[in-house]
Length: 494
Image (cartoon, rainbow, N blue to C red; front, side):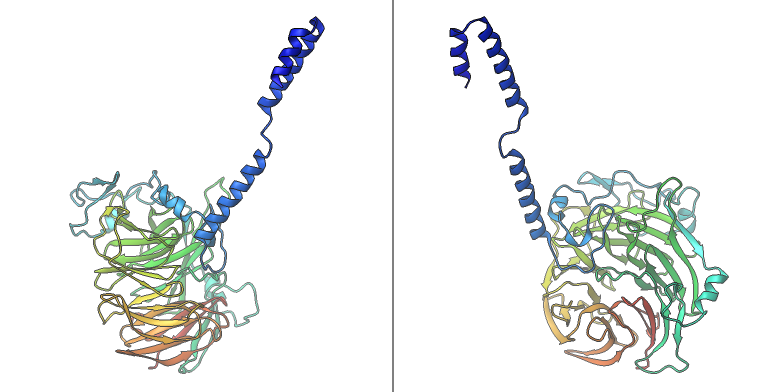
């Protein structure tokens, strides 16, 4: 095209010269501002292909889809990409640091560019260090004590068809404790029907913590009274986003003083129940916090991106160690002696880690990895048999297994023909308690006399799957919370 224009310019007159200049300028302008043919289509096809491959590689068997502040949680679309970009590490800005007595902490050092505090010096938390002025983080959470109206509503009636039931309102109470029948049924409105959450725990003092929506309710199991609840309180001028503030997991400290709450924003709120104060907000993850577990004064958390963070809440920089698992974490628990940490994944991997948690490295590997056909969400260490751990299979296999973590083998198993959603060991009763889904949505107690695993009793009363279990400190009562938004108390008469 250009050479034809040049030839015509050489042989033409002045008018032709002007016309040719205009045509040449228009032609060059069109080439400069127009996209190549098919350029937009190529970009669109490349993006679709990239998105499809990410979803295929990162997809897993999730339960109810729940959105977070940044992404749709169950799809796990960018797990690998975000791990490579280090997006699951703590944010750079930290909440106000707690005042720590001089000489209580060692000098911090740097590992992998991040400050951490060595763990070889025993320390204790003191009330003055936690509750000093200015320690409370500037967070939108508030403690609300149960008022008389809430207490009256708790005992107002047993109309289960009402949609305005108050949390822990008594729906049914048995006059006589019968085996396999609940002695009390209470309301648990707004309980999320999500298989991968951990929303129920009982402290060593018998205090029940149950997350309902974006609030956490405390109920005294000894007095059967609602104590109060923790509720998000948005800052002035900011809209309330309860969906992203909703609770994904919670856990009591072993002494029953501190309650840790993991959110879908990746934060961990730490509350002193005695003083009703939020003593610290730990910026743990940039993804959903799926599980929490204590080892003395050390708190470990697992995220949906497969990262395990080890936090010392007493230190100015709480992150003291980290590890990365390939799959999304849905369960995490330290062994009773604190020597081993077990993590369960959505892809069916059960990983056992040693107690050396200091340092930030992605090269650390679990000492043992075991595999089952479905997600390892229901999991628990045997309190009286060292290095033995029980897991429950999801709806794909429904198998209850006990593993020897030394050899990495399954020593015994039993088929339940149902989804196992939750699992607890009753140490003083020497039995195992499991919560199930369809077809019966029941709670089962098991005896384990090596190597046999035998069901003893079956508790029925839930109309939907039993998502969460907890036990009283003396193991005489079982607490269960189901997808039917009901909270049951069962008497252990065996």
